[in-house]
Length: 538
Ligand code: AMP
Image (cartoon, rainbow, N blue to C red):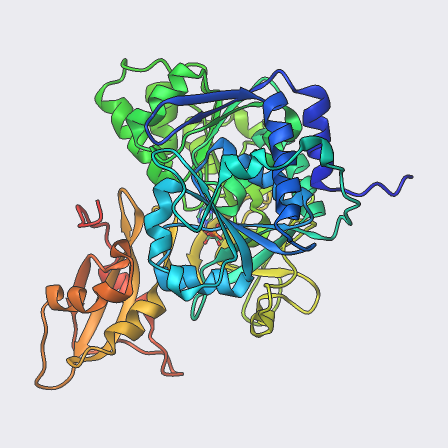
């Protein structure tokens, strides 16, 4: 067989030759619609590649983006890797100190930023060395010292573009994931991983079709919008990019107005949509929407069932990670289960699911033995496959996340049943996932223990109806000392993003410990982890 390299070039060439007539629609920050075709998009992606070369970038240099889901971001998804550079998508919701850290760690030479996010850049600009800042202008002209995105493209000739000879193992993109302790860790996606992941995403229950109109609500800075921009471009689906407005009403307007058939997002988004539909069931005709993919946090069974029974909408639950590009397991029903009673069907659909082709799974106990697939015995989920990371970027200290026999340790504690359906029971990593975004409990604890009145602090996740999880801090005061929840929150505020601050504080006489002296958070969770709301974050 031919030695045919699996690279992003294949996806762009395919889009160019087959799908020139298909549309890509973006809702801009002012809510006006921008509409163009793949025939318009491809030369602009090429121009970006040429322009990056003209800026003097070398093969493998990183180009960061701080953008919403928008057509310019899609252009960067292709233009950057096809210049031989690495697309580094950045989450604007991170704390400025983390933003500075990841830009410096990745050694980003160029930043492409939407002008609505310039205030985010201002918060860490002084702490990073970026050579070129390219601004996508909506409201005003690019500020002094920056380059306008359109001007940059205008300086390049699409005809000067030649598809480079890329090795499929070369880096195409990278994304940082929150660490349990310490700093975020980079995951680097090879061309090959992205191409194979796109094929995986185009197949089976989660499959995107050429006839689909796909609206990724999941941001392009979250694991490449779960791969959808690459997959849609490969398949030739119509793409609808929603920009910064992701409330239920703004989404429904796009779903109806653009005839969206396929969408994907975290549970918080879909819980908001469900509330809206329940309040005013007849307001929007969503009958074209054939699939709502949900992942990033556990999708409540009541939500899946509510969409299904009250609104005739199909929710598909999937699990993945930054380290798995992200598609791992998907909870579609095997054909015999389609015949089961409603209770059984919804119970299966609320599980995380069984692996997509090319992803293998197992669960292991603490002693490193595989646990039986009986739906009862818990173990840590481990995965392997061609789009699973084999290391973190420049992070040899994280080598323990990979087993000696070549599997990735996810940190998710699961059961696997006899059919191979995974169900997440807990997390071994000390992280809280609020509305699809990570909060490090360890970072909050360490900061709290820096307060003069605090002897010990443990932060746990408590279930929350809207955000899935929110942080709760258990605090032990030093003898003779005390502080109020407001004082502690104010103490944390300068160091953390607002949405990281614990909603609730419990003042306790001691934190239960393991034999090794570590906080026994399971005991705290048993005591305090009942669903709470409303919260300041709501
Ligand atoms: P990230 O790398 O930010 O995408 O986060 C990956 C982690 O999110 C996983 O290891 C899980 O802990 C969690 N996660 C992702 N999808 C699901 C899901 N469907 N159900 C429960 N947890 C999930």
